[in-house]
Length: 240
Image (cartoon, rainbow, N blue to C red; front, side):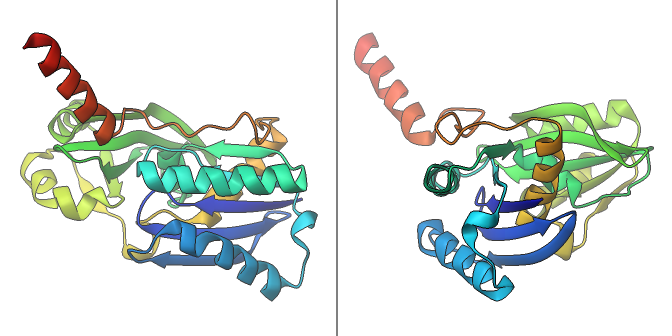
């Protein structure tokens, strides 16, 4: 069983291959480059290094959102193009779920809280924990004000581990408002990784959670800034 993972929901560009439960290759770069310039060369490189053919993969797992609108579109287009060309199924993995999977083995009494900067003092987030080695969703991923998230965590009363690109943005806010014990995940597991996307993809594949390349669409959770601005202009013109 071989799964190709693609992650492009943020500045991080990452591709990986998981073969029979083993991470056999991962190429991750956290640099402000256009994913359209990086993903295909990175896939070519891991395929070349592993000395395999691309058509030997069984499925393509892709970070399905939320995240950067442009990044998600590029990742989705890359996965869809490969899926169509190779006639392989796609597996959409929720971005925050894949982030949480980086912290495999965390105790049942600890909440994993990925936070991605969604601008306007909001975060893309979800809440997760591990029970008997299985990742469980405590709160489905959503876009909400960071203050509302912290108030909810305070009410839940459990230890929290924060990770994601929202941590450096909202670190001071967390330190100011969080009333429960908390930690910030270390750098090597605090960002999106295609290895986690591919590993979860293998689990989803076994559960029959696949879709065709034509069916796959990113989950943006909210409209883009351009769409919001267009709606505001239309509203102003109608009110005039």
